[in-house]
Length: 324
Image (cartoon, rainbow, N blue to C red; front, side, top):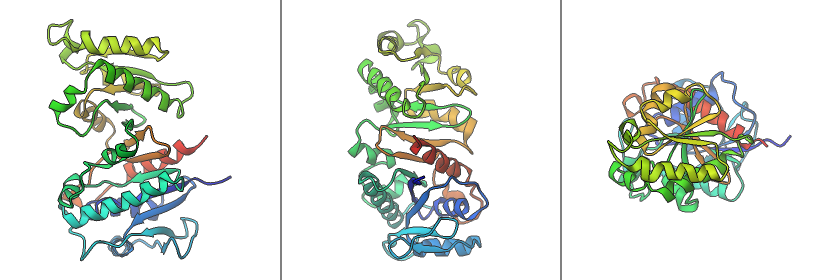
């Protein structure tokens, strides 16, 4: 059996990315079989290994290749200058984390990686470094405009109609055409994961899903027509559902997928229910891409307190998504 080749990006060197990556691969966790390649700076990794007191040999990819349990294969991308600033955003950290991600995406686009798992980056660090994209998904949308941000756990799953934009701009994206096309794209991409498909529950925009127009007419004029049109195309979809109860309805149901209309509508309940085990997954790409559902956690960076569980779940899901 040919093992999938999975890229791992180190994330922001000033956050918990290096710690959770090395804890995951250097600890006693059951990771799936794959050919793993870590995109990062070998100098930073060696320093972090020493701080964590982990015995995990590192080999530069071009020089030597071994199974992961014997060594961590690193695609070495030197740190821009000096040492990483721990615990807060910095331009050098932003440039480094972007270069790691850029190199891994380039390899994935060439077909050299079947999956990509990204440790957390700092959007503030990217901005300080002059990187014009606002994060992983925004950069991927440059090549794959239909990329979908979704979040996956055993407790429930959610897809976001919009993600890293202001609430004002997110509301502008709630149109009948956008929502109908989003539902069709989500269904098409998830059929690859679950051939029998998912049932989609579309959240309303207003309190009580508008209460028959008393609290807003978006449900009547936009959301319900889009849901009806998608249902006519063969999707198992319902809504608009009151947003304060739709997540409870989906909780524990593996065949249900909630469609949230903006970032915080979906992620507040998701992270409350599955912060330690949840995974961010990008759909609509020719390769699998996942990441932990948390950020850089600057407040605990360098303190050896970071929990690698969400990152481990991201690795497991990424490999699972590559399977036929």
